[in-house]
Image (cartoon, rainbow, N blue to C red; front, side, top):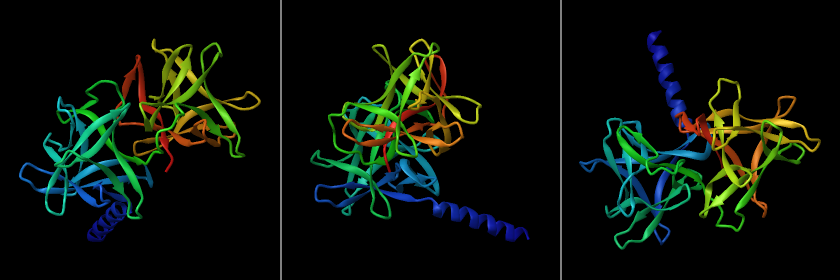
Length: 333
């Protein structure tokens, strides 16, 4: 009986591992050929690098190196080099190189070569100094961009196993080309197709705009801010024991502004973080009957992004307020 129970447990684990979609990580050379991206230890042993969907979502995928069946984080490290090193980090702080490995066994460095706002552009660097894009590729041939993501303006984003981190490596849906729409509207989408305004409201009931900003050509992970006077305040998911996590704007002095959806007849609906899948928190307006309305960022030219909470599983402080997640606009899957 114990043996049968063990077999059932192993089968359950196997099914869950297999059911988790895994994407390959490749560099693409100028001729359109794929080059494997791998992790290498100091002895030159090679390990796979993959992107992993979470709960059937490919909108914000972890990129990991795999050693002996265990996932290792891949990060952009803090450095004074011209191009920032991209490395895998073991539990003991061991550093693994990330390389694009050609069929001729030529190893190309993978680096963070430039930044656009909160995005670090990740490229393989050829012997001639050319940059090759890095992509995550699904079994169905869908391509996502592999990028470094920063959530703070500090050079040191975090410390992992004693290693200073500049940015997290993620795979994201490919964003459209750069546009002239620098300020996007934030709306709740009613089931009948109506768009309801999302606003910030202070303790006196004064209403302020909430917008998404395209900054420095970054269209992968766009900031969402409340516009109060001539200032822009961050919008975050706060730490809470409530069933649904509060979504608020935070002033420079720690003042809290409610975030609400406003119906055509001026009713106010709470905006909350209602569920979490991996690093993503679903942000919804909650109707009086308990139903959820999606929240979207919409450009003046009609492009539409999803509004999500992004958590790195660490509580942090913003102007004295405990925060669970950042609120960002992401390309739709």
